[in-house]
Image (cartoon, rainbow, N blue to C red):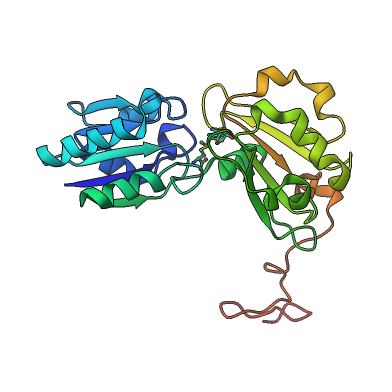
Length: 260
Ligand SMILES: C[S@@+](CC[C@H](N)C(=O)[O-])C[C@H]1O[C@@H](n2cnc3c(N)ncnc32)[C@H](O)[C@@H]1O
């Protein structure tokens, strides 16, 4: 018997990994966070599997389900949105499983921040612009962000910044970032990336709040702030990776006149 923490991806049923879908089809007990994992992803599940939405369950109640599955010898698929390693509250479940002597394994998933970048058709790392992506979140009652990771400090890097779980605090987040990134910094809000309700709003830090109704962008929304979101024409930097004159271990450089 084993518990599989499976990354469901951002919501589209075909953005789960092949391994995740295969395991979903083989497990007879499925726990999923219904507030974030759309039912559509469970189309991969075994038709006879018991499905439990964990949205209303506390940790003890979830652990009781793991214990029951262990006694019955049933494998469990614990389905988390995106990738389980990011804001998944998986660590406390894993600790409980270790205490119970139950084996577990993690199956990675497509995180929502890469799904949102895909919606925008954007590369978040551009040579000489930014080569760093910071993943952070708005501080929450259940999961406070340490003071040393405050947004104003993170903004000083000028890197691509992906803010998870920020919906309810958008005005405060923008205010914290504005001084350092400046009003012209490109930003994007992406809601429900890859799902039928997907939508986006592309703007600048200075204009964003005057262009949207904040209350419509609370749930399942990512804020991306990044100099790499500038119009491609505005960024004259290009990676040398595919430059014909650039040689590396797997490719010879083309000399002037076309010779390799
Ligand atoms: C509890 S966190 C889970 C993150 C998840 N583990 C991941 O890797 O994407 C939930 C937050 O992730 C972001 N999120 C999850 N799915 C999303 C989607 N399809 N589109 C936009 N943001 C999403 C939102 O910021 C949401 O508030």
